[in-house]
Length: 324
Length: 277
Ligand SMILES: Nc1ncnc2c1ncn2[C@@H]1O[C@H](COP(=O)(O)OP(=O)(O)OP(=O)(O)O)[C@@H](O)[C@H]1O
Ligand SMILES: [Mg+2]
Figure 1 (spheres, each protein chain N blue to C red):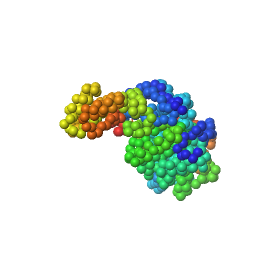
Figure 2 (cartoon, rainbow over the protein chains, first blue to last red):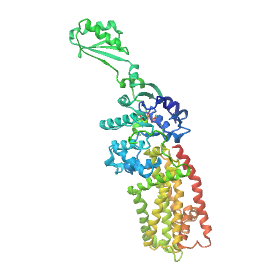
Figure 3 (cartoon, rainbow over the protein chains, first blue to last red):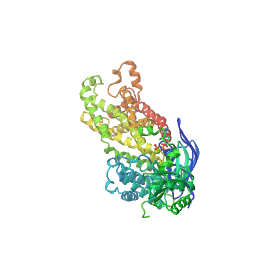
Figure 4 (cartoon, chains in turn purple, blue):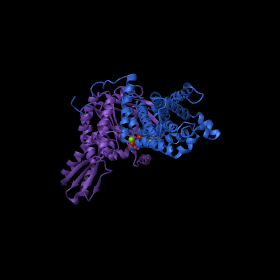
């Protein structure tokens, strides 16, 4: 069950002067979550739109569940669900009507469409609001009903384009729960996000894109290891022995980078991906009789990784996006 | 299947195919657009109040003076209602542009396009729903007309035919507006772009005043304006008699050709454009 269900091969797409996708390749295994991570204007939405058959790529190919997005658009559409970056629900219809309409369009009988609408509203805690027009909904409710609408046809592949942007922390957690449940049930999810935490929480694999190209991919752990690696922090009980501890550690570790922070009575040792080195350092230190109060093996946060991969400043299109 | 969120195992639901799918999907989107109608007070207001206001204003403000320029025996109310009907219906088609632009901007069109439904459904659903709306307007106008002396002089059958002709012309014009809606960036632009050109189109015609009351050069334009041809046909249908020296065929043929021509040019253009949005 680990065959790729989404395959993107060297896809390019240009809008006038902007090369939105400059040869993107990726694949997603069935039943897993791929986090597509990138700053504003990286090409996340464009990638999703190509996969959801809304946009024809200039070159390259893409397939979903074995169907070519260009040549078999209808087949692709029958297995996917799309929750776009901005909620695409009809404001003047009620939540129930929005769901019912999509059920009908998918070929359900009137009764089945009503039943499906009802159960989805309930699952998304919208039963009470189901008969109100969507324009009276809060932002979080809109997002939820939008997601519910994309699930009416029980899609095997779900695209979530920045599903939690603009949600409060509680709504975000709620959405994460739903995403996890979908995956547990066997849905494949491609999730775009600017929140590293979100990719870390939900994604089995992460693809980082920037300016239309893939700049890194792997699991969250692999990505973290790819950069500076881990740092061992050792807190010494006796402040006076800090220098001594540093000397001991400098002798065994790669000497550059070992530093002391007096305020926290700590010595920091970069150990890369070599966890054995960290264990060694602790045992050598204690054998010299220096009392260790505490130690931690820190990982760089995914934020560090992200900034390192995509450059420190947000990409220039940031402002345009906001203006839009 | 009891699990609400479980994906479907096999191929999804059986959907109608071909022409049946076009009708089925088009009808559901028509339903969606019609349900919105009473929930869009500004549209209802614009659609219903505006023609009523026009009838009353024109009838009581201009009725006296223009009435004298009319052929003997023709009351201004009788002259006015078919004219206002074309004008209101033509103006009413601008909502087609606004509706499509709005759906595009709000991402609704993307949602529909990500579903395995007939490609034509968004356009046909919009245009059919708008034709219903125009029908409603035409009926309201006839009712208001009855209050200011308008009658189906040629009998009820020709009267109903008059309404049908008006709506068919509106249907054709909706395709022009659909092109505008699909080409502009937002509903506000669609509102302006879809509306502004309708003023000269309807005013340089026989809608409000007889063409022979205009300066000579303008008469040439007005006489060949499809709006004039439609207004004249509607008038004849309401009176039960053709214009002097013409037959029903003479009057109906150009109107039919205009309607067919407009649809033949603008419907494929709109469909083509829709594929690319
Ligand atoms: N329809 C379009 N016309 C012109 N340029 C476009 C269009 N769609 C996207 N672009 C441009 O292509 C680039 C990639 O856009 P895209 O929306 O895929 O980015 P994104 O990663 O989703 O960004 P965000 O995080 O802001 O949503 C941007 O520079 C954007 O301005
Ligand atoms: Mg985006």
